[in-house]
Image (cartoon, rainbow, N blue to C red):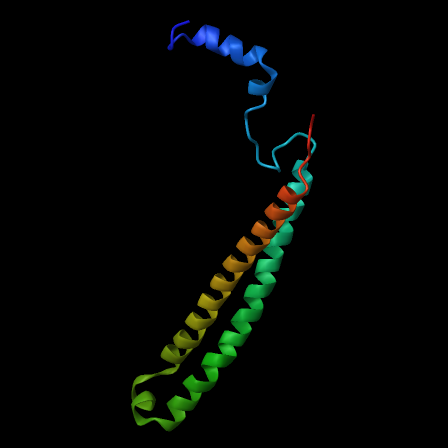
Length: 127
């Protein structure tokens, strides 16, 4: 048998039961493991957790940046002269927006990682 002959080597793979099951699938792609509705519900739950955590972080970031920004505008002459209302709003909202997206992204990724490890811990073994 020649090294490059594809027909005989593919026939040998189909005949051998060990070589037939070589393909490795993701735990969510196995038959009967998780239906499309379950995957969709899991994705919605992960994204909802991210939105809630991001909103909480945005609220805390708004408070944490608003207090020093507004205090510095009232107390420091440089800030009073150079930071108008638009600049103050931009400082506060940019910190809140950054906190929202960073925390939401980390939460969604952590939730997806946690769910993928739960699926791997209990594989559907087919014999």
